[in-house]
View 1 (cartoon, helix red, strand yellow):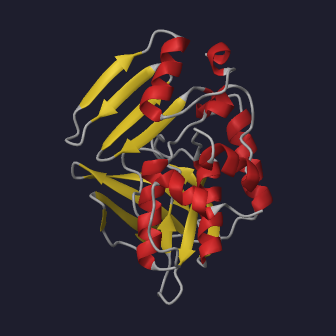
View 2: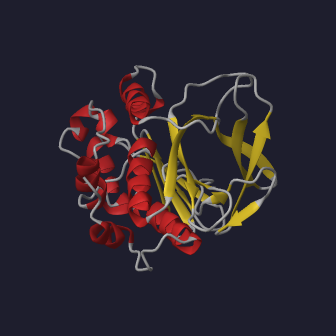
Length: 269
């Protein structure tokens, strides 16, 4: 199974040259983030999102849906490989909101991408969703601040406690650097990614048991966390609204996020 690239490009509104170049990688990454929302509706209604490419194409490309990290980055990796990029799938620990000293499981997926003819690799992640997420891939060079489409990121490399160094992706907001995800560079086989995906979707204390949807729209950002909807404007100002009914949630998803949820969502809420 391969991705229908013509349909994928139409879905994210991309009309560049489908060649394995750094310019293509950057523009595709940005178009994907702006074109497909982050959402966990399937988990909320009680199912485990499929990572099969045919299912991802039906849902994220041909359907009015989004997905979370495992879905988004699995789809993006397949697209890049079809175009001639070399992609290594990695898993990491989300650091946002973690308590000091807390060790979380590896429940996030990122990609290390090698561009033909270019030295080094780039970190790609179209499945983080938050305001500080990567809009463009980040050169995998430690301690180098990167301004990617107006967002500032850097990678730090920590001394290893185990057999491999730990890379930490940080995002800068208002002069403060916050960790987003920590990962190592060991390639993660497909079955391991499937297990992590299953854990996130089924673990009773998973944060994705509540509705969690994010969408970067232009220079702004939308977030629905449970029944709390937050709209962030380009200047950083926010407007917060509490939703009062499942019908209001569905209306918001269809109108603001462009998501047509399955019928079971109302009952799950």
